Length: 479
Image 1: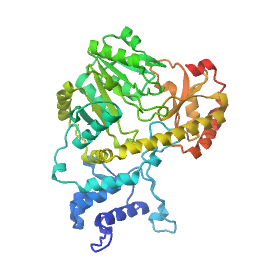
Image 2: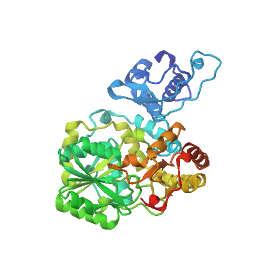
Image 3: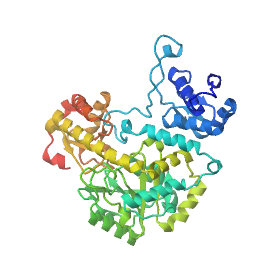
Image 4: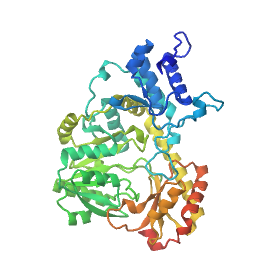
């Protein structure tokens, strides 16, 4: 690749932009293939006779737009998820080069777990990424802080104080690899094999799998209109050491843990010496009122470990989250991070820190709330028109998906298989239950479905699963 990059030192375009343009063009025409290894920024700078920061800036811009990815010791690669151009373009034939599409995973209609990727401010993000790449100096080339980039932890602390009512110092915050990374860190520090852990049923599948893998003895508790049934947990496992809960917006039913149950949970945890892992799932996206205060904001007994993630509010490829721990536990968590080499790459953390500190983060959240409210209403309306009484749509106060109940005699897993065959990606409600499902339904994400596309998606889903459905009875809709 290197001989194809001819730089014009006297040209109007900056050198980093010339490198960016040459690499991007090579990817577009197939000279560089998805998954192909690139020289390191240091090697590229040496071979082209330019400053290392110039090569870093070019690579930062390419990475910010998804053209290249860093794989640690494996080096820098052309993103394996790029769509390769056809062979005729690569041979210099008459077919024009095809546009390069970045598909970290195929975004299918109704697919859960993804924010509105089409509306993410990619140009702004790329500018911040380039700027942070240019700021690479000696201080950033040493060992990273195992707890996370300090400016990012300071930005998170400021955000939580304003938006979630959580007063914490930056040294109480540990940057993690998403929510799963936070669970893993908690398990390493506090959990011992055989410890009982209350979990929500239905609930987040990966959370219960992570706790089970760490050796926890799972105690599933049912969910009703007020959230997790705390009294059931006290009756069944009063000696539990952990509770994993989504109090602001339950995953997947969308209900909030009521204030009496919040207070009962905190009182029990303080008396029992138990730890509460608060997953602040989808808390930023409420459409009928302001976001609820975090459970952690009521935690006078210092028993709550608060976990947040940037996967839903920015984009999941970041793999960045954070954990807020009680002040007394900071030394123990710091030591485990140090011994486990929990330090993460500085560049992405620095970009997120700048995104937050400069005010882009709250503006982005406000914009997404408005967008999601419109897309949610459009999909709910389209589904009602397409299905009538064969789907019972449950609209909760917030979240990033709809819950569509179906008649109990219908298998939601069979419906999902039929939808998958039509290129749609709903999730079966029954898969989120620990034991026997107490109701059948479909989890339908609306985040990546523009309002204009909602009727077409609803009709496609009706063609795929409509013949298998019957009118939903009142009892089935209330389960």
